[in-house]
Each structure stands twice: as C-alpha cells, then as structure tokens.
Image 1 (cartoon, rainbow, N blue to C red):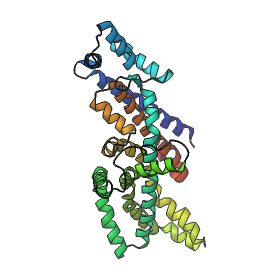
Image 2: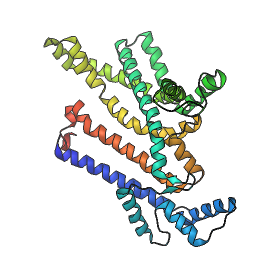
Image 3: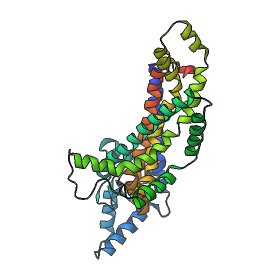
Image 4: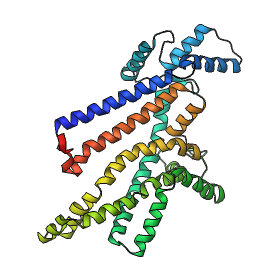
Length: 339
C-alpha cells in the first residue's frame, strides 16, 4: 500500500473526527439557555421531585461531575478540558438519568447493537449476492423479472415500515416472537443453550427488518454482473484457456462485487444509525434506544457520548473500506491521481 495514500486517509479520518466532536460541542453550547443552565434546571427539578434541597454550589458541583466541564470557565477552556478527558481519561461525563458513567452505559449496550447490526449485514448482503448472481445468470427470464420487481419494491420501502409490519404480524398477531427485550425473563445468563436461544429469539425480528437494507442491493449486483459478463477481457481469458471456475471467481465475481464491498463497509454505519428508530420499535435495549432515551429526557452528556461513538464507528468503517479496497481492486491502491 502506498504510504502517502495511507497517511492521507488517516489524516482525513482524524480531521473528520475532530470536526464532528467540535461541531457537537458547539451545538451543545448553542442550545437555548446554554447547557449549564439547562442541566442546572434538570438537576434542580430532579432534587425537588425527590423531596430534597440543594444550594447553587452543590448544583454546580453536580454539573461539573456530569458534563466534565467547569460551569464558570470560558467556553474554550471547557472545550480543551472536554478533549483532555475524552482522549486521556476516555471519560464522556456521567449520565444524570442513569447515575452512571457514560462510557459504562455505552460499553454495556454496544455489543447488543453490534450483534444485530453485523448479523443483519451478513444475512442481507449474502442474500443479495446470491440473488443478484442468479438474476444475472437468468437475465430476461420470468424469475429475473419477478425478483427485479421485488427488489425495487424493497428499495423503496423504509426499514421501519417493515419493522412495524413484522412486529404486528409475527409478534402481536401470531405470537411467534417477543415484542421487546434482549432475553427472556428468568433465563439465566451464561454460555448455555437456553440463554443463546433466547438471545436469537429476541433479536430475530430486528435482524430481519434491517436485513432488508442489504437484500435490496441484489439489483445492483445483477447490473454489475451483467456488465462484467459482456467485457472483452472475459473473452480473452476464455481464449487463453483459463478454467471456468477461475474466470467465474477471479474475473466475474471479483469485479461484480466491488461496489457491494464499499456499500457493505459504509452499511455498518447505516445499520447502526437506523438502530435509533429500530430499537425503539422493538424495545430492544441497545445503543439506539439509549440515544433515543437521552434525547427524550435531555440527558446531554449521554447524548454527546452516543453521538461520538456513532461517529467513530462510521469513520472507522469508511477508513477500513478505503484502506482495504485496494486489495480487492489494485487500480485503487496506487494513490495520487489513480485512487
């Protein structure tokens, strides 16, 4: 891999991350009344509701604890302090709704969201590759026409509509799947069959709903495969006497799947961002539901923390796609004007 290409891509990723956190921090301070006043009001309301009393000094100490900022410091000092604690202490503040560090809450939830996201992508894109290949092989047949119509319909259907239809039919009407949660009540956590089965049972509908995003990509693979099948280099390969299996895998499959690979890596970010709505529909306690609740109850430290994690995953996904694309397509690995 070209060293300049690698350095440039890493630099772009770092700048994107810095810009996103800075923009989030700026928006955080542009809220009506400012974040400090807003948090003071929320904390005061919580104390009053619980029947307690608190003075202004105590409330400011709680704001410092929750948001990682000193309320009386200038904004640029608060900005530097936030970065220092984020980079060197990996601290994103403390959630005042959960009374726990934001990093702890995210660490508890993110494996569950990743579980749903990864399986959704793998199932969706595997199905799209198989269907797309079959459609290209049976081009202009009845099977191709029917599947093309279905794929176009799926591309036009938002995933949350599919989610609502599934939860209504498969969960509420037929009772085949639970309507919420990550695991059944009373199931003992651990490496046992009952626990594993319960996890899969509860995650089935969210995974199926999000898989629609990947399955609809079959129509793209069909187009790529048909385009590749008409290329001159395939005829040259046949004339050279190469084995059909080698032509199918190294020439047709490799070139037809190139656009799908980039979509797959970026799709990780897309599936995670869609989890905000999806986990709310299925009451699935993951990162998405955590962020949704943070917005609902104005838990700003938690909201900032989840935004930073979503951004980081998006940047890492795109960076991996950029750095590894050259191994699949050598034309993109040269850097400079050839990238």
